[in-house]
Image (cartoon, rainbow, N blue to C red; front, top):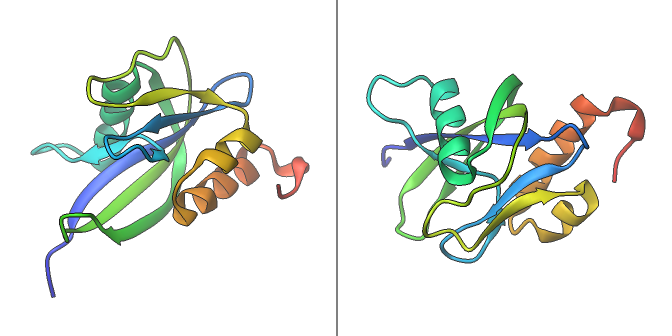
Length: 134
């Protein structure tokens, strides 16, 4: 059994109810995430990664589901996700191919991976419980 590499990320909504997405180095639309630095908690890593990749400072509201996958280098990753709220101008990290706030329906259409669509649904149900499923 290979060892999992831990990471953390955020599903961040702005006051207008839009969600923050990035377009990664492979061209996939997804949520900002990254590796933990030594001595860093999952929450600290998630907040740092969101801010580093997008320039948006978030506030954690609560944990979301954890995702597990094998990346394109064959490494097992375990990502701990957090529902966040935040606002500000998006300033994309060098190397990304896009970043911005999107309406939930547009984000759902753009997201490249089924586990990210599930995270979006989970976060949306927490923040907007009266709106039902998409």
